[in-house]
Image (cartoon, rainbow, N blue to C red; front, side, top):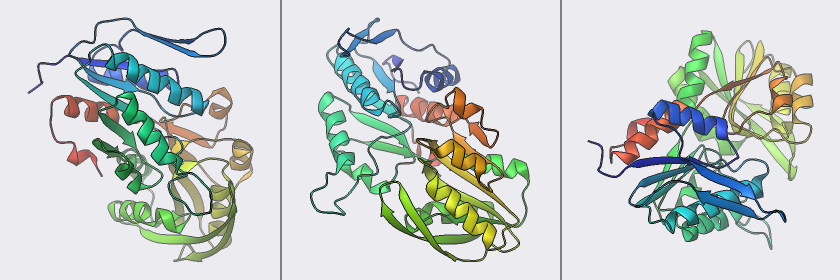
Length: 315
């Protein structure tokens, strides 16, 4: 049963299209909010409707410009908190700064924890996010975190392709758990790439653990940034006898030379989701196909609002 609190949806500027799709799924319009800047670049937020006692969901991906997106979200949280919202949930389809999640070198930050602290301090009481770069980031929060996966969306797409003799490939050891779960649901084989990272955004592919020979390889990762890893992984699979090589990821960061690398690679198709919006240049890449996660996020929002279980969505 729906609670007595009104459900209110608001969006920042980072991924307005996804927010509108979520609102359409839920069956109500986005709330009216002004999110602009002052002449000096400072972010200006004004919530244009009453949120007193409401169950508020703020939809904002931490996508480029990343720092602006995060500040918009923090200021929106503060605005609805000071407007007496009953509960504030930050809906973050793509959680930024997640790659710095531990001290693996001297004198480096744990920025994933810092962003978690900023969100909590601003006034967020719950977080809904998707495919964190590392699952333990959930523990950086002292508030409830609902961590969804884009697996159902990607699985549905691959099943409709009716591909046979498939092997799911993890591009590194960190993604093995994700790839194994995906392979199990698709009843496919599993392979792992032994990768040695040489520096930020640089990787050297070493060996394939598993058999890709004579199979259709599907590389699975949480994000594609500069596409160096995914392209090298694809080439290694092809060199080891894969019939074709595909890729699926949740977050299409696509920075720097990513598009050029993907276009020049041996990849047949790269399937991503709309947690990060594709710009006009991205959409012109014939190898890219974007799937929507709006129904998944919309269903989670409805269940959270109704105080219902979201366990069935954690697949």
